[in-house]
Length: 193
Image 1: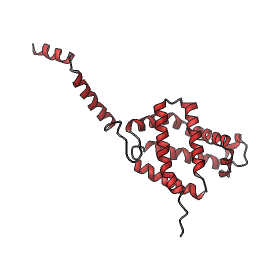
Image 2 (image 1 turned 45 degrees about the vertical axis):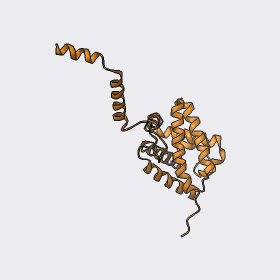
Image 3 (image 1 turned 135 degrees about the horizontal axis):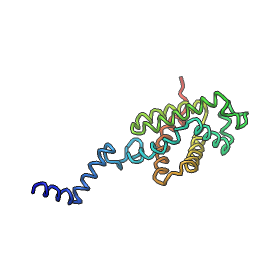
Image 4 (image 1 turned 90 degrees about the horizontal axis):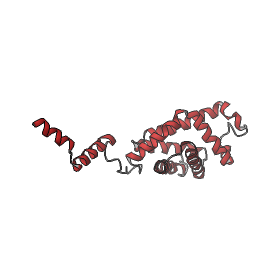
């Protein structure tokens, strides 16, 4: 009789118990409430997951992706090519044979990969972006150039990944977080020694 009682209870789990169990499972899966916004990054755990998941296929062939990204940037905004001495006078089909271009693509994609993979540690990403801003300020890159790059990235992601609106929005917030920290040092006056 006890086994019959247990069997009948298992079949009739109360909806409130199911909701509690679902909440508990969700909390354990996400490591906390998936929809709480991190005060540093402005991203939720759910948004970070969407960005990281959508990044995986992009990073699977990072050199090809990075090369395509820069190719699109140069075609959309030809004046940006002036910042890249190694390809300034090269025809497009010769970019990928240039060792300096290859090195820049690898650096770009490695930086992006580190920034995406460490979104759960936004203080680290913020520090990385601050350093990136410093290095690009020394090269006289302007904020407008970063906005142009963002435009090209978004178009590339729409064309290639066909992201849903929620994931695209998460990417937008991610890039805003990165740019906030890049622009702090990019736009600061040169330090005097």
